[in-house]
Length: 253
Image 1 (spheres, rainbow, N blue to C red):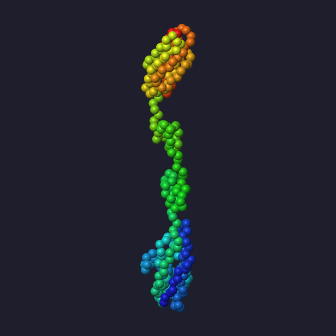
Image 2: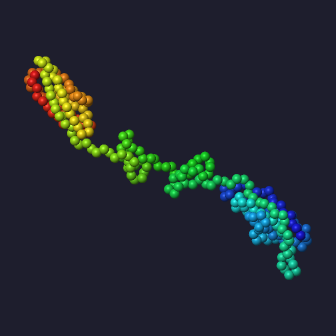
Image 3: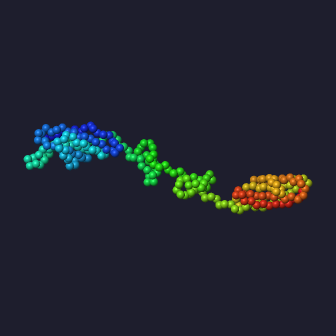
């Protein structure tokens, strides 16, 4: 007693769950004593798990969970007088396998919901389902902090240079000389100044009247004084922090 086994072409392509369905169909046995059929399935050629009795039906739905091939065969059976099964020889073994290419794994993110830089689903987009990365911390053009927590980590300007210490020391006018040019109304004035950071500029006054500003040493200027009498010439030195000090000298016109 033999049966003929045919594998139906109803093979589903890969679904989103990477599963498929095949229908095993066989021809009926020619033995009039046939009582039913047993379907055998294995993952190794010639090695099958315990068969499944499908009764007298001539087809069997085979659920394929993955892309591995399944080796399928069918045997018919009849009953002995004592009621035990008399299983006939197995039909030639055929292979059932899901067609198509398995889908790529789904896109995933890091534990914090941010992207991991990998295009798992191979769609040309990286981390498209993930949270966008926070903005990066930035600093002012001079490298010091700008007082903003751009990356929202609770730390402000952690990558930036510390601010320079505040400058509280005033510059010093070290000397101030004023010399009249003969009997003219012109006076040549020369000042020297220094600062712990640097002198920004030196202003010159006659009395309370501003007359000149020099930003580069030597701080030398010619001042005209028209009115006769005593006059106070003052030099005021400034640094970049706004600290200032002055010196003065009295001249006679």
